[in-house]
Length: 618
Image (cartoon, rainbow, N blue to C red):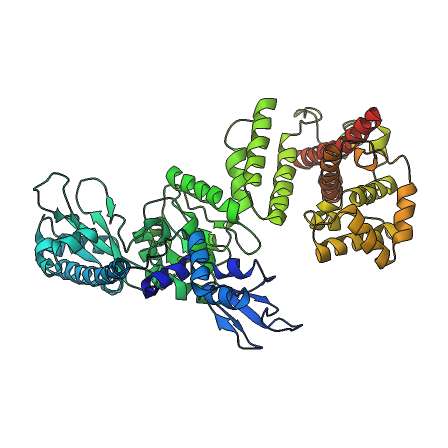
């Protein structure tokens, strides 16, 4: 069977080529592209590139070139139709049936572009005519220049039920209804009538610049303020972004894409020289729209209105994006002054004010933390537990294991720092000075001998031996926690060497089991170190004991690794706070020192509790 060019274009547009190739080839981000060693010929230096925005791959070594369909046929040997069906299933498209009706449907859709082009041209003429005076005045009040008006092809729909229908009668009522330009009443016998009446009209284009829909703004009183075309064979609201055709080339030069809430914000940005602005079409950002944004920039900037509704929309976008984030795929958030949208800010303070905000966006993890930590009071244990549960539930939605681990670590660090109780009340009336803090007001150190043994500069000997022993028993966690393990301050010598060999094994061989790991370590020449480690007794954690429950032991090994990885930063911050206290002797410095001491003590307390629990189970 033959497939229409329109279907194949839609299929390519819905397919992220790096996700297809990345299942077979290890890709590395290189600016706006991905690089790899070519799968079609042997090479040591990567010359194979994948470009999501353009939708193709190319090898500068052997000349291999093609789209996602070509990759599946050439690299995996699939027949053409099998490759199309595989991609169509993932993209949610139905492959056209092999009959004349499919061709007729494709031809019919192609004819609808002509209808929309004619409608856009006629609406522009109405804006320039007598009936368009009020709409022209509105544009002038909004600061829209004649150049911008022509660039975005503004139009006007007269307040009539039949004028557009009459003007485009050559196309036939059926096509006008199918394009969403006319409304067909449900009652039998009633004639279709114009959908847009008395509205300023803004054409919506696809990525190729073809008009596929309209947005209409009411000029007087009435609801809704903005009215979009309905879903049609040309217009899929959840996969379309306003101004995508112009923003795509502009984003390459600007190396960013800015997402705002509405048409007029996009147009205001463009008029001030920011051409990489896009907007969703009256709905929250969808997965399809996020995929298109990530083709333009690794971290699209969401610049929604400064009111409550705008900030809620930003949070919804953050939660929608979480399952899909990964290395080179995130979001940045720009918070506007309360009650202002980008257009308001640009008219009040100019481009420089907006550029200052765009230059310092809030990260996705910061926005998630700020939203959840402020969601409700944290006065009771139940409320604190609720915050922790919400954070971990969000983290669990992240598909990429490395990013998921990083989010868990970052959010739990903040949670523990926020929810630890203060050691003692501050007495405001007591004079502040260096002598006040020397001994008398310092919080007591933990009494546990295990906590006393913790080194402030690195892992204690028993800790490093215990971690290594645990990793030998549960090597499957090496690949998913390699970065955290690499950050642990192991003592130099054999422990550090073994740690590095274990990480190298995980990165080279993926998920490991103990038997396979032993074979690899023997080849690496560290078998003697491993054997000596196995003979060490009394390490004090569940994951070093053979009789411990494996699931619990593995879970506690991860907890200990994350806890120990957080300790050096706490120690450094506490030392800096103590130095500031000795120099300044003010209340803020004292409170910061108290907070950090409490945080450090809780880390040590957690370690001590795990050791005590293991001892109690023995």
